[in-house]
Image (cartoon, rainbow, N blue to C red; front, side):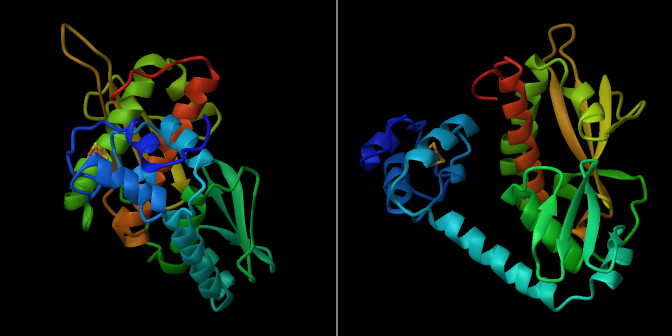
Length: 273
Ligand code: SF4
């Protein structure tokens, strides 16, 4: 898609419901804020990730959210320089080889050195980098208990839950509805583990985006006229090891990654999921 030359070109791809979830009074105001670089497109929960990618790729305006994220990453890396990585490795369930602290992220090695430089077996997305560094710096190191709770039951999760539900659970459900290998891929590509009898779901897989922050994804297939559903559960200790913003970021990032995988495999998730 050619880069948007003005706010109207962004506006024409918006929902036009003026629902205000982006924090602007109207979709037009939101389009203007995005064009100026004051808001990022992902603040509108009704835009799918594909459209966000297309519009962002072409946007000439500096993206304030992206710059803010880069600055934030810089601050976290500064903090890492003041941190004893050997002590941190023990606390967060990683290992330290004298140079780098390494954790398993979705089954793959992900490391940071004393200068805050990240390296990994996988592509380093910002949605992994920020939670990873927050986890290394601030996780209390509480071991998971195996008791699963919803996002809204975590500290400060209640108010963010509507957006989490829309951006993560509903979108991931749309992927699971059409991408029949999704849960197999979670097991085989991302080191997940299928578990039994979780809330009577048809399938439940536990994955580890971070060692002490497991996520359980449960899917109920459509049945007897009932629609399918999908819920993401966290260990009750998740908020002791990661702030709610990072927990949200991981959920949204995973969802986008699964959407892209589904597309790559030729599946097209239902719109509006
Ligand atoms: S959240 Fe999206 S649909 Fe709602 S007002 Fe903002 S731009 Fe429009």
